[in-house]
Amino acid sequence: MKRPLTCVEICAGAGGQALGLAMAGFVHTALVEYESDYCNVLKLNRPEWNVVCADVRDFDGRPYHGVDLLAGGVPCPPFSVAGKQLGKDDERDLFPEAIRLIKEIGPRAVMLENVRGFLGPGFDEYRKYILRSIDKLGYRMHIDLLNASDFGVPQLRPRVVIVGIKQGEAGCFSYPQANPQDAPSVGKTLYDLMAENKWKGAKSWAKHADKIAPTLVGGSKKHGGPDLGPVRARNAWAELGVDGRSVADSAPGPDFEGIPRLTSRMMARIQGFPDTWTFGKKKTAACRMIGNAFPPPVARAVGIKIKECLEYGCTDSKREVPLSRAVV
Image 1 (cartoon, one colour):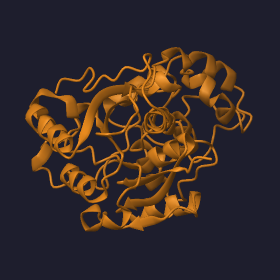
Image 2: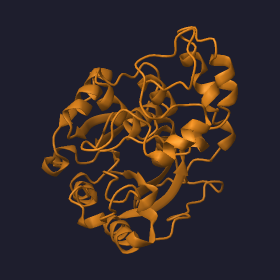
Image 3: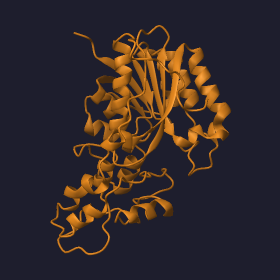
């Protein structure tokens, strides 16, 4: 019987990536998260997880030397088109800390995710620097842009996923196969939740909401409240029959008329979380956690491919393609 593969995760957030990797078969030996609200959510949902509520800059990776995977969703504001795109000059850029921890831990594999803006031409040199820095530590590097809708999540949500496989590992890594037809519409995804208070218009609403959702927006700690984002995002939600100006406490009542709002539970389902995953009692905090999360189904799909790579050798049908698609 094979031992379970182990994982240390940094910038764990509300647990989207961690949940997906756990579903793929990884056992977390530590999850590092700075914000107390997020730490509480992680502990509430998975009491067995070792949640280290600390700044990743203060986290010592040496006690975890030799784990199978170092994963993390380093903060996206330095590279987000919604921000100032300061990149390496943004104090929130934690890629240097990720590189430090790779040195200290020496994992067999690395998985880091960020926003699409990370692939922008303005970050070409910094992106090359990061990939080369990890490569010099002895890893075969891969980078690709994955859409959540290709893995059963009912929203587009493009995310850059960087994977490094330690030199000497026998397995070959390839990104999971995209299946865009697997993503259900917003109407199919949320019909039962919209109808849970016996809203008479739920069936008609679901029929109209026949597309996948725009990318959920979480906002930062200083900006962004319980809503569905800026004007462009709200307009996209309006086309699906959703009022994005605020988030509701409950589903529409029987005689509700007008455009319904989403609840935080509906947002979580759009993000790919199971209904059993809770985000606490603070609506604003919950919406930010959900909107900033990495969809668990995407993390699971990538995690399975990393696990296959670490557990099995190469075959003719598994060709390694380093640095795929994205310009580096």
